[in-house]
Image (tube, rainbow, N blue to C red; front, side, top):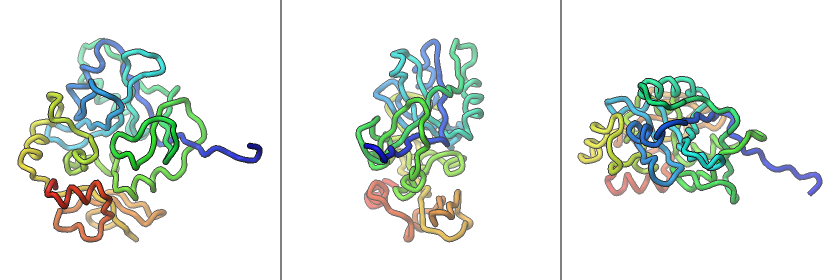
Length: 245
């Protein structure tokens, strides 16, 4: 209709890495926390050997070209470091790992485009396509749902303390990944003593990982006995109530 505008959907703070070549699925499968040989997209982490988060990203199939390439939807500020890290593991495999600026990550809180975010359907819909108008509202939407992402919020935190179990970010049936031993031990012992959470805040505090003054919100790394004033979405409340924490 004349005079109407469609809201923007491009997440300009995200970038795409393309993995192409010989058995890229097998290459990534042995590195990251989620099963990339099954249905995609998935949310995954690349960890240290001790099980702490280095990078997190969504892994997508290359549906447009009907090939075997994989696409990593990651924070733009981490893309160069992630390419370099993956290249270390590549060794002599005939695999290309490079940023692909022809494609962008898109998001909508509702509608029929794309697929539900693999972490949590309430996060909205995600898809990959050429860039368009910038999206608005994503950051606050994510934080209000208690979901953390990116190096500023997750880096150097144990993967299960990043709520990876609750947000579909780890598989213990797919085989090995970097950091699996400590991550699996924590899961088996149910020994998760701290978690990343979102809380209302007027200033950064000693436990703050990231502070967003425009929303009055902060991401904090807290002990389980210090959760009284956090934003407690259903997905996290259930885990805390049943002892999954």
